[in-house]
Image (cartoon, rainbow over all chains, first blue to last red):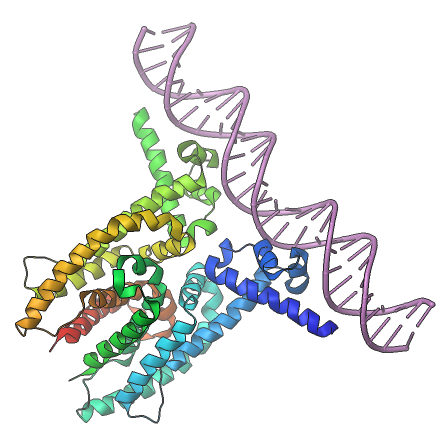
Length: 207
Length: 207
DNA sequence: ATGCTGTTTAACAATTTTGTTAACGCAAAG
DNA sequence: CTTTGCGTTAACAAAATTGTTAAACAGCAT
């Protein structure tokens, strides 16, 4: 009972904090708002997480992990032939971002506002990522040799995919009021947009 | 002399404010930092602009105007045939964003954090934009009829263009440390990226 | 010189926001 | 039953940030 109760309160704070930080950013977030939204006194928040900073880092950690998962989704199913794999990777990445639509803006804002903090992280991740790039590039080159697709730089391709998938959600509030019926039905638009992004990349690699 | 001097100080504050607001956002910006960067006491800032809010609105106004200019750049030269026009529009838009790399993130963050404020603006702009869309769509349809290109929805095409052009700069700090030599030389990368974006769209409309 | 105007400064006030502390409650362990 | 330790509260403290004011100042027209 006791334990379950504390778990619950700590959880409630984390949930409220995630919401607040993702929508307002670190500077815009108010610890009092978080406490209020979580239904606890703000002293409780400090009891569990000491400082705003520490609470924030807890959220950042989780979000960066989620972000990296979304990046891996783009890799698709390695057992498929490369072109199919690409198609399914784009869709998977799109779906992943769709489930975390505020994530990219949050991560980018955080990196822009305190780049130093993530240097170590990058140093660790970079070799892993580069290895994956090399593997994928080899596969793409093979397919290009066999005349299945055009020769492309995998990094450029991935940037294009991320661009179109992520921008759809980051810029949604900016575009929605301008696009009339196209974006009126969100689900419909997202489905169309996903298809469009896949189509665009597929045509990009077409011979 | 007197007038020129005040102009200069007010200008200095505006320049410093632009920098601070664009990089840190409204909440993250500090009026004292702005004053310090402008080389004036912070009372001066309040003398000229009354409140942080008013100073911010001054910057926002200008930046929204710049943003809309960048959107019009995408239209390209109307005297060119539509495919060429598209190609030059993409390049022009890319160059525009390159000159204001922090602008999109700023505008999007602002719209996300206070959407109500921009409802009126949108109401005014929407019909204009829709008119332009219709005109362009007609041109695209004509070219498609003549077999010069595939049939596409102009709004989807514009979203793709903006996605790739804007993402290049918004996500730069996020991607740069991951991409190794590809992004090591910024100018080189931007040139390659511009070409890639054009190529991607050109292939998208290819029959 | 005098007074008028807008500018500048330094000190101060107000507010907001984060963080702390001391006392209280309560359940489990000894 | 008492002690111990965690959870909880309310009140308070500290710091940061924005905003104000009164007085000094500088240029200039009268």
